Amino acid sequence: METKQILVVDDDAGLRELLQEYLTAQGFQVSAVADGVAMEAHLAGHAVNLVILDLMLPGEDGLSLARKLRVQGDLPIIMLSARGEDVDRIIGLEVGADDYLAKPFNPRELLARIRALLRRNEKTASVGEMAKAEVHRFGSFVLNMDARDLHQDGIAVPLTAGEFNLLRIFVEHPNRVLSRDAIMDMLKGYERSPFDRSIDVRVTRLRRKIEDDPNSPAYIRTVWGEGYLFVPSNNA
Image 1 (cartoon, rainbow, N blue to C red):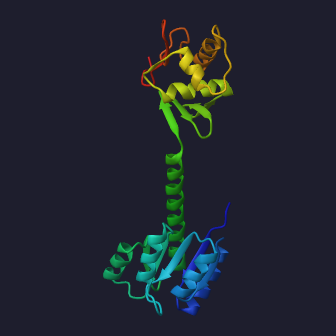
Image 2 (cartoon, one colour):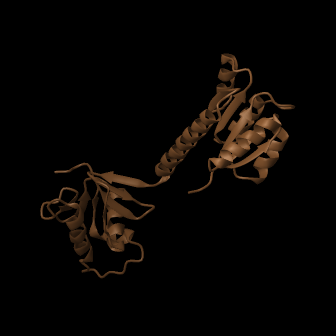
Image 3 (cartoon, rainbow, N blue to C red):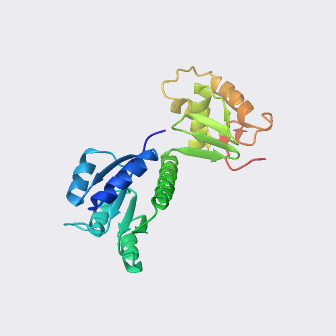
């Protein structure tokens, strides 16, 4: 499991040392700096998973630094403040902090908030990656174009390269009759003769893997004299 990198930004040397020792003992890689200038220098040269940022800092304050961090990306921020007033908390959250903790605080509470925020951030990232993947669904099947795999109810359905390429053509052209010649043209580099019936053989093999009854197909239907029609919404 990857060790998470945490950066503590606080002008209190004693608190920096305390948090660095405590969070390191909890399995994190922890760096600590005293102000915004040092924070920006550290971020320029190091990967960081979360920032613990004090509100009251010498020079540029924590609110201004939080705004900058949020403009630059989605790096999780936990803001600390000795004042602990509601208005400070609200302003801190409004400028982009993900959480807020008033000093003095129990280090175990900070730890719980760090872990919760990192879990939430990882979940969001995972969902984002899934959204980027090109996925097609029909019935109980999920065809992932990037991974080049097919699953039915979470169980992998093995496909040959030819079967995958044929299914890809069908799902990319739903509810449209495709002639055999059109399908062959879309299978790039495919050599054929005028009497080539290999598309029919591929369709037969593919039907055996996705149809409840290959002899009465619901998804890949034959349109006599014209070609094939893929109907993704029909489960009958």
